[in-house]
Image 1 (cartoon, rainbow, N blue to C red):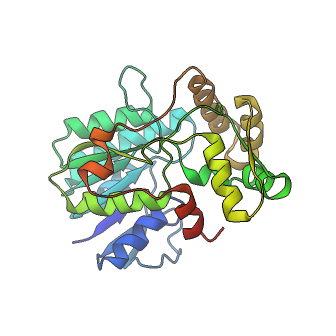
Image 2 (cartoon, rainbow, N blue to C red; image 1 turned 60 degrees about the vertical axis):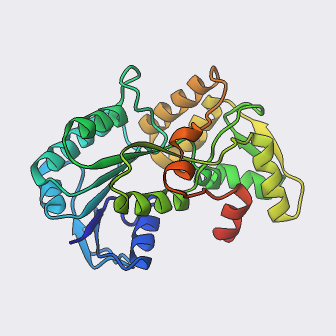
Length: 281
């Protein structure tokens, strides 16, 4: 039996591979490059989201599958979601864990993540949905961390008083490993710091780590879009900027403690300071 990990060389998948390998599990790494070397994986498969047949072959006989949708246009993400659901229905892996990557899964809002979550719920396969809010790794984008280092300013498109239950990809990996084993836990599991923290709290943690004053600076969603476009493309950057624009009308993005990894799994996400130490910043 094996655990199949999507995006095994990427930001979310690689920590999951490492955590499973550390636990002595057999890992099949899914990548776009069949020649990729994935440390901790016993097998590497080139299986893209665009082929339901490839995914079906990859999932068949798996003890567990970890899924997350890549950053792409919403049209492509919908295609990928439907292909994943087709593969899950055909291959019937023992367990599926899906990370929303912070995208909404409310059917009333819609979107590819909601399509995938609803399809898994209706598919009759044991599954759980990991629901983070925002990733601490977003703060490592060149235009963000560069500003912190060069100017002592942490720029991000949220209000200074906007509380967020931030999580890291390392926290997601911890939750994935637990959920692949804990088949008694189903439905949505919220992953993130609780109580939620604000932008100035983040800046204070960076300042303490770097030994200098760091202040938080609210930038606009449009400024964020402009900075991200060279990194992820115009369409995906516009979609993400739209999500941040929508956040401006929200009171915050805090997890619900009753569905938290802390309560359901006994897994406590890292503080910002712990995360900074773990990544060696």
